[in-house]
Length: 106
Image (cartoon, rainbow, N blue to C red; front, side, top):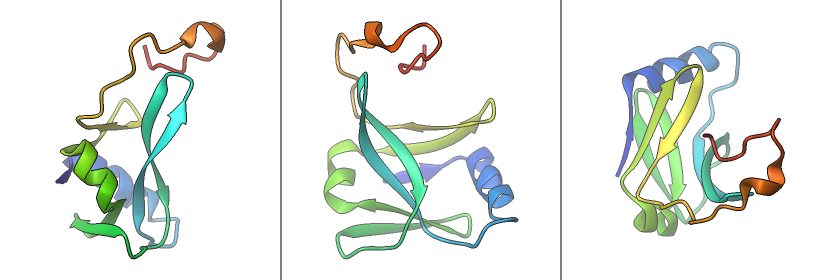
């Protein structure tokens, strides 16, 4: 299940006032502190599940969604935040990131 808060729907709506409407992919990437969820504009693929929310299409790979659901997209403090059942890795390894680039969001 994917939920998108009203503030996130509003932020997406503002974004698409100046961009061509496109599906929004939720994806998993590896950061310096382990796996992190992100969003990008993309096309729908055969292995995707599509969630129509607030007039927009949010897409995610079926296999990924089954591993990390529920997923919530929020927009606070001028930033999209994606939360899920995905647990951050212990120990993260952020010591190598330097003080000017806090990759762990803390």
